[in-house]
Image (tube, rainbow, N blue to C red):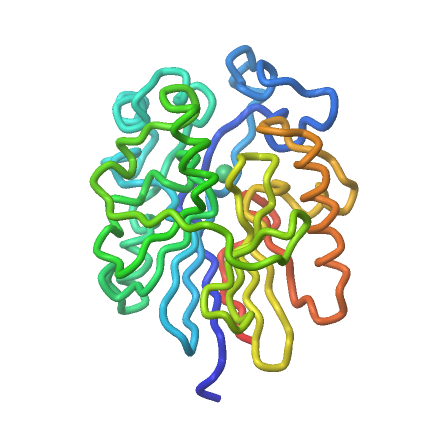
Length: 282
Ligand SMILES: [Zn+2]
């Protein structure tokens, strides 16, 4: 079947965080979630995912994972991380490592592609573990981010975001053009419902999920950081890092509803340790 859609789930290394960041729930606060006062032994390692979608309409990358600059030798490198992330605090919150072979360009090459083959790079939001690898795929034909997210990133620059991750990248900020989702804000990429970017704010103002629907109406839902693992929308537990807790819960409830639809093949969170790298064909 030539019309098959293939979604490759990449792990581009891992991120080491305070358990409060993904699983904090209502009792969490920014300080606990930041990990600044979390003992090293209490921290947990989570995968940092990116997705390559081979689709009849083109080749799509969702998020860019860690840059090689995080781990020049493929091993944990504190100095390199602080330099790449641009601040000591970001390093404390998001320590990471990307082993040799696991950056997006390396995994593209493994599948016979180069960054310039990408028709679209879809940035679910601009946190470092999603945007760190942007420079390495800047040859892609289109790089899209929500206007809401670019504004949010600008407001929170130097604290949560560093524009140097995308300063040299030709990135287009879009306004929502359709009304799917919990806030009736979405971006229908081809105006046919096949690839929808759906506003699910709360973790970040401009966060979107990517809903990929095939000709028979079955869909895979890439939930990004709405919840860090399936358990979060099943049990409606809020992650510890949020821009708006109320919106975050509304978004999470909506992810849960999507996951319960009969034609939903799978909902996938970006940092779920239960999701191993694999390929979904549908
Ligand atoms: Zn993330």
